[in-house]
Length: 119
Length: 484
Image (cartoon, rainbow over all chains, first blue to last red; front, side, top):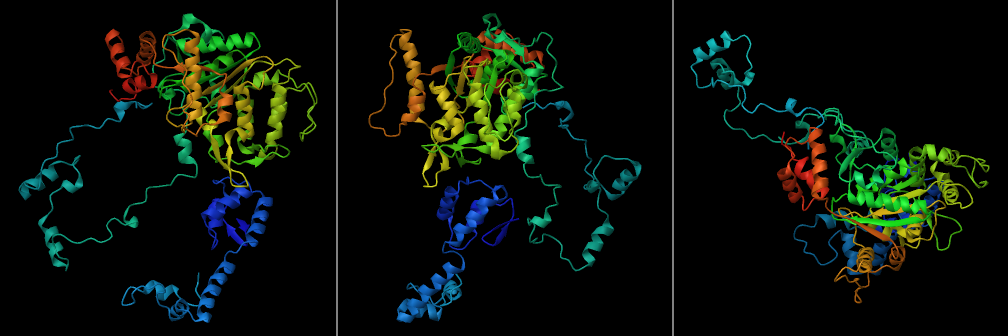
């Protein structure tokens, strides 16, 4: 097991997939991180040198990912609500934000649209 | 494809054992039949169902007739299929190389290759076997490919073609004059380009050359092995330590005898182990134990092999799948730009040698083979090879020969590729002639792999089927169709 950014990964896991398991870190960013540290796209976590692992952890800690990214999202929603916008109110009510009908099929909106959105 | 074990054992009987249809027979007769035969090959299910069985079925509350079965195709319904293959096991099976088949008939007239055999014209259109030692060397150098039909015959043998003799002679001439032959083998699909490289390697091994072979250029450029920048290079070059370690070990195993007799010319203080002058190169190669230190060792080995102030054997440096080495690789630099293949240090050594920037002290050859089945399009390479071929025709004053020019409206050309291929020779491998085809088919027949009389008619038939004697197609038409 190799710990990157406080998370333990199996040695057989692709580095790319391991990076993309963090919230708000997608294929584009992970490809760039790999290139920055000279890791080939098919590298597995087990083959990384300890130095590279610490460098990756340091790199990730400077980025807005995981709880930081979630908080940024929640802040955005909160800002909308505090301004009293329609979008903010709809978020607070747990209803669709972008003009969808509410007669039926709003389960996704009910699940996701909150002021304290999960992410 | 014919299997190494006897096919007759695997043949299923087409007409099964006759099963009497007992369901329609009267019950008493069926019972008598069952009692009369203490041993029967008839399946138990074919036994007639008794009346009582039917009755018990109707007693419980299950409804007769067709029923709805849910989850019939779910995973747990399927019986476990035994042990699943371990990681890498399937790939190892796919890539395995079998070089002999004990069920094939040994061919009595088959002789082993000698040091001069591939270069003498009298061996044209003869099938010659690879000696044991050369087999091991070629295997270490990964010259055999899993797609080739080695596993069908008693021992590996090669057909000596006109092109083979031509190539071996060119190599020998270059080595005699201490010059370098820089040549690209090209040709149609399954025409025998990789086989030509294998024959060149066999010739080199038989004549005590040092052989360095990169079996697949794509292993280096498709971003599937580790890479790292080499400090102090401008523009930045990249080493591939894991691949290089593998390569050093392959070189060591393939050229053990020659390397043991070649000695270092200078000391190598940069290596972890002390290597004074006059140490066998084999010992130098042995220094590489881990991927971390592999690249400096390879550099030291290369500088020793190309040192001009010492006695060196000729060197053969070869690569298969040239197109992959002539385009930007899939690796990325930290700025997220694609790295050109020629910036990968190992391929740079090869392309420099192919382009003529490096001179081997005792001469030798730099060979590359193109591939037709696994090749990205590289317009510069295709054009350059076509140009070199046309220039050769113009030199020989062939009528109507014209050197193709660049398309002025196309932007996909690559100057670095053109620079490398500016002065190479091109050897085009096409179909074999009928004499060679006949020799090959006689060998197949003598090995028991071709059950037909090899006469004029059969040879012409297969030769024509194979598009004027394209060897791979001949194999497909003759060996790989199962007509036992």
